[in-house]
Length: 233
Image (cartoon, rainbow, N blue to C red; front, top):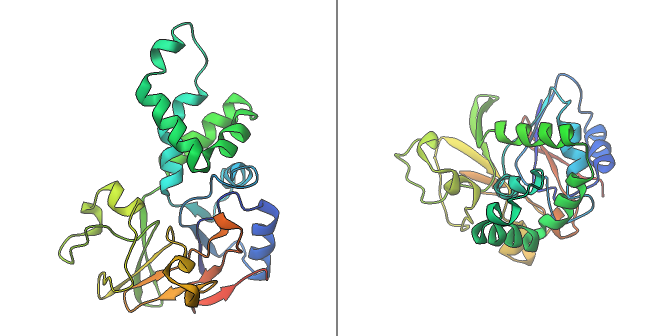
């Protein structure tokens, strides 16, 4: 069985594990996390990142918040004598914008870890894919973080820029590949209106599974084999 979840944003690891147990997730199953484990709440997702290092059947797909964390990788460098020279205005601006978008909790939690664990996590994030293509019960699917910006049906998924796949904010009327189901998060479904609050949005060509865990709501775990939804409450 293949499962997806997205935009955990510091969701407690023990609650994620309880949710997986509720779905009877086992060693023969596979979970894709569609980006944005980090930032905003709790320990900023660092416990989940540490857990991911040892999972053989769970894969994080890079989200825009992980990309922002990697953009601030310099924050984990050893402080050197020329720190003021290397901490350029551009870097300071990038760091301030990341922290203002919820990255402060992640940076604080990461800095408490041993240097080798920090390095392992950053290496893991560098290796995360931007998207995955899977086939479930004959249905081809693309799993990614945000939908597809600047969509062109004649353009292959591998030809899109990273920004197109990390920062899209789809309209309900958007149509993607007609024979491929695109599954993503990034845009909380409640932002489309109260009628979508705590509900997955399904269109003929795409599914949005971001329930808004970054804003205190409970995430949903979706099993792609039968589209069964699992929630803790």
